[in-house]
Amino acid sequence: MAESEYVQEIEDEEESDYAEAEPVLAYSRIKNDVLGIIESDSVSCIKADRKFLIVGTHWGRVHVLDHDGNKVLTKEPSGGVPLQNYSI
Image 1 (cartoon, rainbow, N blue to C red):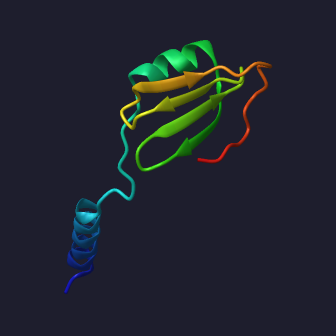
Image 2: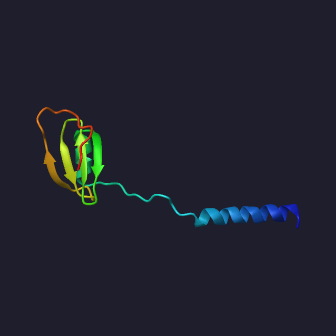
Image 3: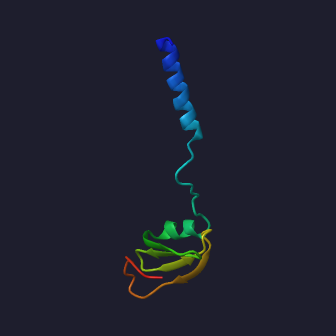
């Protein structure tokens, strides 16, 4: 086998390996009410559950969202202290 044929064969194998590879992580951006939350405040922490997401902000607000980003509940505790952690 000539060297050029060998090189071409290796290149063909490498191209087929890349074509068959699937993405490791698939994701989509959460929109809906999340866009309004991050326009007026910045997120300090996020917790995820199988049914909902909890977003804490630097102004001390707690937003409970479904996985599509729709707001279910918002709490505004007094003090306005940034949330750093909470448990579900």
